Amino acid sequence: MFSAKQRLQMIEKMGKTTYDVLVIGGGITGCGIALDATTRGMKTALVEMQDFAAGTSSRSTKLVHGGLRYLKHFEVKMVAEVGKERAIVYENGPHVTTPEWMLLPIHRGGTFGRWSTSIGLWVYDHLARVKKEERRTMLSADETLQKEPLIKRDGLLGGGYYVEYRTDDARLTIEVVKKAVECGAHAVNYVQAESFLYDENGFVKGVTCREQITGRTFTIYAKKIVNAAGPWVDILREKDGSNVGKKLRLTKGVHIVIDQAHFPLKQAVYFDTPDGRMVFAIPREGKTYVGTTDTFYDSDRAHPKMTSDDRDYLLRAIHYMFPSVHVTEQHIESSWAGLRPLIYEEGKDPSEISRKDEIWQSPSGLITIAGGKLTGYRKMAETVVDLIAKQLGGAYPPCQTKHLPISGGDVGGASQWYTFMSEKIAEGTAYGLTEQQAKRLVQRYGTNVDHLFALARTYDRNQTSLPIDWYVMCLYALEYEMTLTPLDFFIRRTGALFFDIHSVQQLKEDVVTFMQSYFHWTEEERNKYEQQVNVALHDAVIPCDEA
Image (cartoon, rainbow, N blue to C red; front, side, top):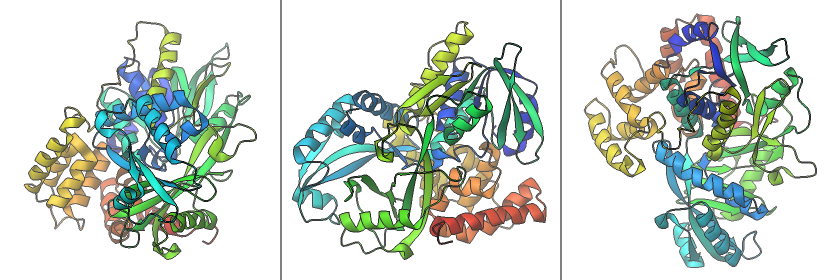
């Protein structure tokens, strides 16, 4: 089990073990590396300074997509590789990834012409080896409007219709790290790597860590150390004295969430804005979310926030492409801001900087991976672990993750997902759940839903004020997903702060009370965590320059 209550025991064990590989960073890249390394037989540890996925990996556009935009910059190899990875991510975790038909409207004078879109999507399909039934079709103006009547009619020439994959980025990351732990890795959140330890030859051999809740320090030793810290990569390189040559440039992307009552989008749309940038509008769980912005960022890495400029840019984009949608800032229910750690290229705008990943090794032996995209996480991990295997020597097998279901994903292949889902929804109603509650649990947890159904048997409405579905989600998050704070639960285990903010407002005190009882928090600790939720609720709606 990956329990919050066993976390301190795990830290004790980590301080007494010498590992083959220590990964610093619990985003999708670090968790992918930990899974690859441990499945090849390497003794593997991972530490994350915040919560798993708390940085970039819970703040993306939530698409496992093939990077159509990169064809514009002729990054053909990247599109081919990342496009193929989409299908692998889907096959290994159909509960957290789902095909989503995307509409690309073509307007007179827009970024994409009808001919270039048709050719671009054809190339995209073939590079990404898209299966026949998911290959692009070209639509007339009338067909485009049938797919999405809200699209701007003026100058509409038609549209391209193609498949992307929608994901829950944070849950994808959690399921990957859970699988790594199932396979033998040791992983903990809220542990910061503070400094490196070196042998007499100057090679890095360990890390001094600080446990963030108690403040106590301990040491982890490993033969190879990987810096996969995302936006904090260069800070760790500075600690290693190796922050020379290429550096990161952080860019910020913001998304806003609007209820479908005010923005009744039927169909995911990828559209260009007056300044030539591309923006997504995607329906999800009764909401429509729109993003992303792309601006250079130099402020607080841990807490990037929406500004009024970000908000107004996205509202203008909505009004431009969907002129009949009269939404204002009052209609924004929630927002999130995320940082992309890109490799700096002088003279380029944020949207022009390549999303390619790069691996560097310092004179001390510290391996750093930076850049890259959510979709390509497994392939990036394979490249890093291939390098480690070569340097460690020994008879390590090749990458094992291509056909390895992540935690919750072992349903017998993506083709079996809908059969599995319908059977489990029916089963869930036998445990006192409504059909809608059971469906949400099955969709979110996949084959792990059996654990939640078992927890439903322990539900006693006299013992908790939480509804049964929230009770089992919260208890499962604590017992099986190393959840330490209410925000871990509301943002990264459920996504509720983004897509179900009213439930967070209604249930926040009940969840805090439940977790206080579980962890035996003092009143002071309880108040601290309650305050964190209140601040997050405020920040989700109010731009930081208007707070």
